Every structure is written in structure tokens, then in C-alpha cells.
Length: 491
Figure 1 (cartoon, rainbow, N blue to C red):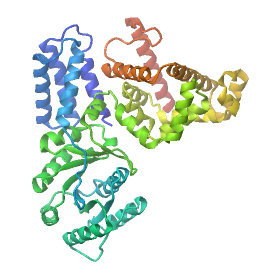
Figure 2: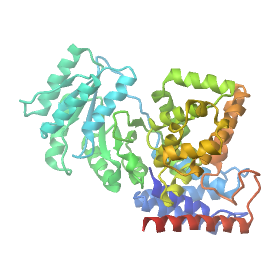
Figure 3: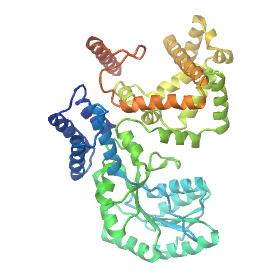
């Protein structure tokens, strides 16, 4: 998500790295790169111009704390202005008696009907009782799709295949909603391939006669500036209460997320981040800004873990951690659980400091998910005793395990080394009380967040000493060699 924007912003901040003091000229040069990054992300020209002017004014003014270094100051202001640009947002759905009515509208192909199902799933998870209304009478397939989604979720769907009038369908649906004792009615209205007078007239009539409590515009985030333009047109006609950006997980630019609120005044309330019914999230500007700046999104990761992981298994693992026990079976289970959160690249993007590593792996043609599957294969080739007691794995056992997994012995050594480091971390955590443990995690997060792009000279992981210019050059050459070797193998 937003790989292109993050990389461009990374280059802009790195251009200002290493300066003891930032002059007005330095700041303007760096912010010009930020402006270009926003434009290449397909943000509005006016939005990019105003954004950069605001950041420059605040940095050169008296609002900035001098306790930070110059680059941190710029980063802090950019982060706060990104949050202001995309927010504020209230993702709650109002409660109204006898029920709340939500109208979904949008262009054809934006994922409106699928979003209806995702919204229903979210409402069910929050204890609400939704009902879907098939008000898209232009596409019979949309009605079929909505019935299938309703069946999967156990949500009632109001359908009238004989009617040609969506207003009548919506009115009768609201009467039935009272009888079914539901508390949220979601109207799935028709779309078109483009904005036209006929579509707007139909939606206007539904809004005027049905009077929904909330009107949400569903739009494909990958259409960039077109998403903003269509949101503007719909808002002028319907007075939208919110925008739902779909396919945000495939959006490398982020222009729609950056510009929708600033241009239309309508907040983004929810975002679609995948194809499954669970892949709808509340929109949090501060979390999105953090992702754009490569600082991860720990809160979203925690929420996903809490919602998708088995509580009993988490409790068991916690008990194991407190004993300082971490077997290869535990490692295998954690890998399996992590896969439920989505691709490894997606997970890495949520962890502070890991988004850049994910990008580097991509440059080297390394697939993190494929690598994790190989690790799983190595563990599966071990005996139960070897998984419990990895210290008994000698050279002879390593050869057998490698042959069983179809990998080199070096892969087995890498896995054992990784497990040893993680086991050491678990043991260290087990000796801390919960408060100390939280402080350790917070410190790790803060360190990664304060240096999201690896700003400043690199540090050796083992000693913490800064690398010399010669060592940095050697490190660069090693990465170049890996890239060349990858390219030769592909040929």
C-alpha cells in the first residue's frame, strides 16, 4: 500500500539527512521533492501546493520544538499535516430508532455490492442486526451477488425482481425491516460506468423519498484523481456523509486518500484492504499517515491479531513465554497464525521500520511469503523431539532435514539461528513484569518510528557503532552483487 508515495517521501527526507542545520534553501529543496512526491502519487495540484506551503511556514516559524534535530522536525510536521489533510474522521455509524438507513452509491465496478457485504460483516461483529436491500435493478447479477453475500453472513436480503422502480423497492424494504427487527438497513443502489444525469436523477429520488440517515460513496482508490472527481460530482448531487475507498491494498500511489477530504470536504470513513468480507477497516488518518511515512501501523496490527487469533492459543503462548519456553512448534504456530493476517509483505508494512525492508526484498526479487513457506517446510521435516529440543540437531540431522525439505543445509542453519534469537528474546521478555514488557515494546516502536527511512549513518546491529564510509560502501557493493546475481538467475 502506497509503496510509490512512501519511496518518494523517503528520498525527499534522505535528501535532508546529514545536515547539521537546515537553512531555508535546504528546506525548500527538500519540500520541493515532497511536493513532487505528492503529485506523482496523483494528489491534487492545489492540495500538494497548499500542503508544502503549510509545512514550510510551520518549520520556519516558531511552532517547532528545537529539542528535535532538523530532519525530525520536518518529519514531525509532515506527519501532523498529513493527519490534518485526511481528517478528522468519525467512523461510527449513528444509532437511530427504529433503525439506521445507509445508502451506498458509486460507479459501476467500484466494488459497491462487495462493500455492502463487508459492511454487513463489520456491523455483525459490532453486535448490530443489518439487512441488505437489492436496489440495483440495472444489473440482475448484482441482486444475485447480494443474495449470496447475505446467505454467507446470515443477513436478510430484500429482493423484488418484478419491480422496475428502485424507490418503491427501498420503501417496501423499510417496512419489512420493522417486521424483521433489524437495526441497520443498507441500500445497494445502481451504478453506471460514468457519471450521468440519469444516474444522478435516480439516486436523488431515492435520497429525497427514502431519506437515508447516511449516504456513503464507494469508489476505487486505484483510479486516483478520477476518484476525487467522481466523489465531487456525487457530493454535489447527494450531500455525502462519507467515502469508502475500495482496493486500497493495491494502491501504490495514495492520491485518492490524500485528496478526497481536502477537495470534497467529505471524510473517508472506511477502507477496503482485500477481497475477503473481513477486509474492511475503519479509516484512521493518523494510522494512514504513519503508513505513508513508512512508520508502520501497530494499532491496526494489534486489532487484527485480537480479532483473528484464537484467544485460548494466545493464552497458551503467553503462559509459555512467561516460562521462557519457545519451541520450534511454537514458532511454526506463530507463522501459521501470522498468515491469517494476510501476506507477509502486508504485515511487514504495519510494523515500524519493516516497510523499507519489505521494499528492499522486493528489489532483490525475494518473496517474503515464499520464504516463510520454505521455513515451514524445514520445520515439517523435523521430528517431534527435534522441534521441542532444537539443540540436539547436529550436522547429520541437518543434512536429513534439508533433504526432506528440498533445501540446502544453510537454510536449516538460518532457521535454527532465527529461532535461537527469538527464543532469547522470549526468555528476556519472560523475566520482565508486564509493565516493563510494554515499555520494551514501546521503546522498540519509538526507535523505529523516529528513523523510518534509515536516516543518518547506518548502525551495526551487534555493537551499535556507526558504520564507517568504507563499511557503508562495502555494504552497498554486497547489495549490488545480490541484485546482479538475482538478475543472472532470472535470465
